[in-house]
Structures are given as structure tokens and as C-alpha cells.
Image (cartoon, rainbow, N blue to C red):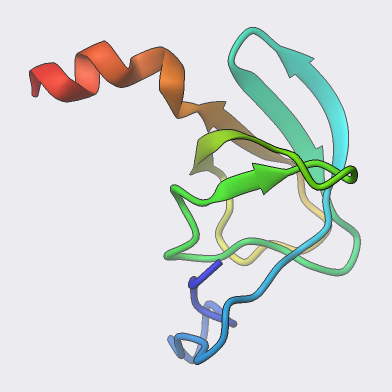
Length: 88
């Protein structure tokens, strides 16, 4: 993503970055993930989730990703909310 590289310095990367997450649970339009050594950060919301086979599954919004390595993060599948988004 293009999010900050640290919650303390506010720097935005010059190159697109990636992080690897382990899927803990998928329920309805939510993914619960965790990473032991990487994290999304402020500004990463709205990026694609790419599976290990290289397929882009959907664009997700984030919740709980605040540069928190090793903590559980929840991702929401945006396509299920398109009607509501367009109505705004």
C-alpha cells in the first residue's frame, strides 16, 4: 500500500509496499488477519487483497490497522457496500 511506514514519523513511501498476513477467519464480508512482522498503516485502506496464487479477490476497507504489528486486523469487503457508497 501507500500508507505511512510508521505511526510516529508520518512518512509516505515513494514505492508501493506490501505486507503478508495470515488469514485467521473469513465470515460474510469480513476477513480477520494477523501478521507477526508487518502491518498496514494509515493510508493503506482501500487497497486490494491478493491471495498467494496472485489473484486479486476484492478491494477491502480496513479497521484496526494502525501500524500495529502482531495485532489482529479486520478487513471489510467493499463490494458488498457499493449500493450504499453510490447513494452517498
